[in-house]
Image (cartoon, rainbow, N blue to C red; front, side):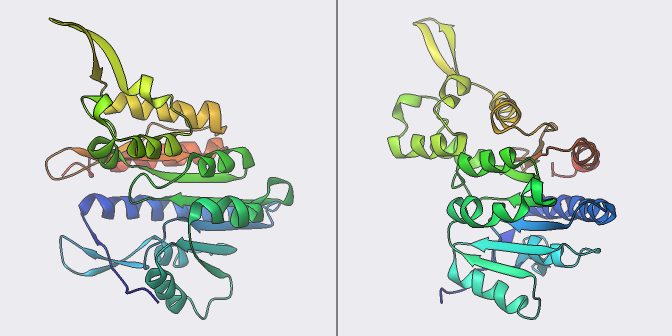
Length: 277
């Protein structure tokens, strides 16, 4: 078994946990009342160890998997995925007496489309809420696309701005390493991000490529979730900021369901200023 590593999380991550918990509670309440829905699932593609350490207080706080398990009414199934063996084993220990919890050790880019999403088919009257909270650019577009095509899955997604800015979206794009650009290709689904992230601008030395504002990139990705992946409702994402005010990631929500879109839009409005500390 791998050695267990417990993440320290900042204030903005605690806000994200609150947002996910609040929406998951509303989602479960609504689904529980739908007499035509046979089962609804909670899925966490980057589940972690189940607990975190708060940088603010130094205390342990519940992570998204254990928060989900405390939601009433309960989900029909829970699928927690993590590549780290120690974290997966910790989740198994926390949930060993709960029959409808499935802990998967491995890459969610393979496990989700191959093994988990099929358990939430629209035609089976199954639905799912899926949290995709990657640590960096290690989520493949094929997962988001597969979820959108299902028409039965809603996703909450971390759009990892910090990794993009540090490793891909440099001022001089020709200096970016090919393997880093490929990571962005895999996340975006193709190379079209390149034309969005840079624009031609006149300078004293002629036209030169200049880096576009990250908000433009995020809006382009929002459009991609709608037009390409097929999610009908994608509210404006909420920017999550560090102590200096810099955006470290955007939190996206994408759904085939108008009600879900309206609820999350209201939650985003509620929390939009609390992430900027």
